[in-house]
Image (cartoon, rainbow, N blue to C red):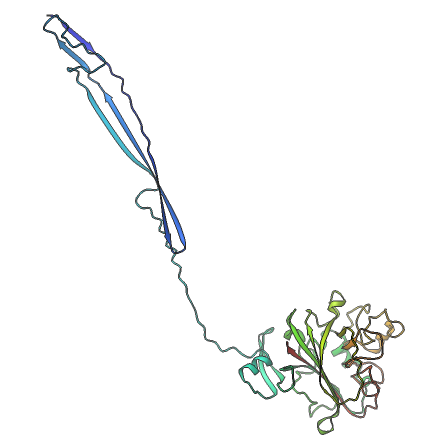
Length: 395
């Protein structure tokens, strides 16, 4: 009897199979879409480990019936096969990490029922069709403060808001105005067009208490929007009440260029408003107005802070320094600061409206001066008062 002991060692082979399953779940919630990606790693470890492979084969006969342990399996070989499968879930845990991007869009609609105050004469007429001309309280959008204004709902192309008024009492001429008064409202800033005056213009006629020069104005800037279209109206007459005579009332369309003074205007295009679409609302002057085809401007006032070079004046539509000897720089000594008016571009003695209005010069003239006929307005007998007003309407 012979005893043979065969020891077989089997090398353990580990096979790792990685299966990546990419599941793209698109969760759309109203407006947002969340993509959840799940990566599952399945690691299968097959350990076929024939650890105790000591097989004792007892051979009874000497014939080779004895099963020698070979690498192939021996019946007597005790083989332990351990298969370990580990599934590891990596990444966005499949705990339906549904990042439910519930974009809960809460739309809150707040309806405020507010009665807005009147902002101009147009809003008054819109709210009250057939409203009578007169004084109304508005809240100015530029200052957000209440103020009184005079609205004219009767004249065409309106409604019209009164911007400024100038009054010259009977028997007086422009040079009768004290220098200090002229300097306060026409020469040193702020001047009349900036709202520095003797009060708000709340009447289209001279007041009962007006027995001397009177100047009233709003700040024009507070009622103008850069780039917007308006109509500018120039109206003047002599006398009062039943004695009112020589009335002239004209309006023009213009686009506001952002300036009401020549002082800070960067160039000539900003020193005046180009006027178009002339409409005469009333004319009892018998003046033969010069209305030839030409560029017509409303030239803005300038003050003592402005260098008197290249400024528009009523000197026939030209600049200072370019029209010698008609308007020379020495002419500034005659108190033309604060003057404004409507002029045509052609150098002549005509004009489509009042060329100087107001005009508080040191000369023997009215506060309204018309180149087309200075004997009616300008160098007249001054026996009657003169009342000048400017109005504004939205286009």
